Image (spheres, helix red, strand yellow):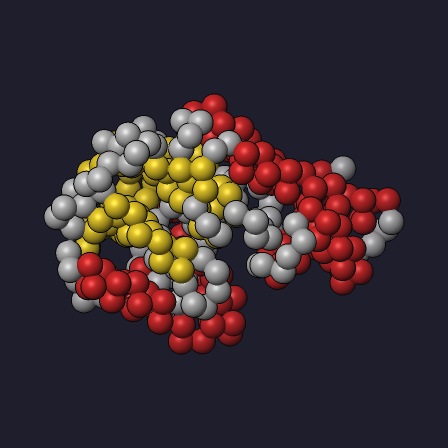
Length: 278
Ligand SMILES: [Zn+2]
């Protein structure tokens, strides 16, 4: 039974399948992530206006643009605090020029002209109260992105955790940043430190409960790394041939196309990283 005073609304972006969440308390709303594009950010803002309570703050779970790009549209013209752990804030600022260079041609005006950076830096272990909701912060470092964090809602009977992209619920995953091993370690940490019945509100796919999904995600990462090794080291493939071979193998683990392009983008960077480690 979840705390009736705090309800969680899921917002699914139109531009591509990424979630943001709205935590509604008696007094206000907290947004967890904001999706990528300006039009989705405006839709998210309209959803808050429909709820009819003020936006008390925005949390950015991790350093990927499909989660923070639309903060600009969400908060524009208003003084709304934006929270992140220090490492997430650092990476967003560090990579901003590079993300502009990559995302502007892909998304045009959907990518905010001026990105909105976090305004409030927090630390792992902090209890952070934003409006009527209080969160416990887990700073987990590199994983799916160069810096990830989880935010657990407090004053709850059943644990509810905003886990960013720790898990893609039955969608293909992005591993191009090169932290697959740390991601696996974070999944093991989640099994140790999060309540076993925690409901996970994830960045891609349906919210989910129970530890099985953590095992499923670890299996996906293991399968991906094994597929790149098999194609590159055993069969000597590179480039498009390697990508096709990895995509074929991954379809046996996850037989759908959801976010397949993210997995394909991850093949060549992973081949190069694994080759440099040998
Ligand atoms: Zn994402």
